Image 1: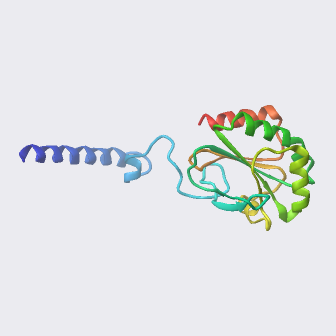
Image 2: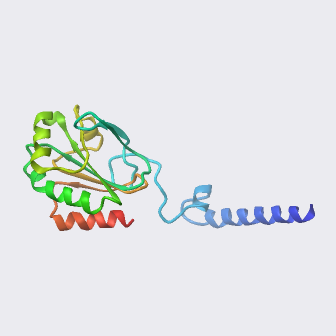
Image 3: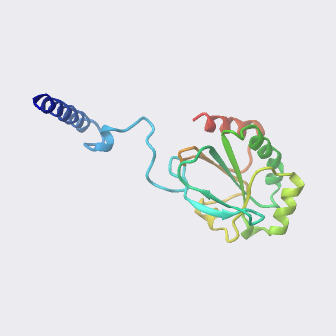
Length: 188
């Protein structure tokens, strides 16, 4: 009995010491500061690097499946917002297919057709023309594009396995640049 009392006293003393150490550092005294890791997962959601990706659900192009984004996942995610009339989107399609194929064990690629600025018919033709091999989602009213503060086509959003946005890329990158960013994302 006395031994248990000494153990509890020691534990309380260590916790007290941890709080005292943290209170002398910038950020003040809090349990989060005591148990904080080097890369804490943010609690705020927003379309900005370093924040949790805003959650959403969209139907696939063929309306067969519903895809969910938001929160932790098994693989990193590349969200690609596009429209069929967008020339840079056409230039990027082959690169996205390659990334989806080469990183299939570590990365999901979701193409999000912003159907508000396009048509389902044209989106299907684009998918057929470029033989896209990854899920295509339809954002019929543009709500998800707006949620992610889309301003240009294509817009690529790189999201890590914890659901945290690592980068938002407006416009097209070279195949090599995009692959370097994906490599860094999946190795995170």
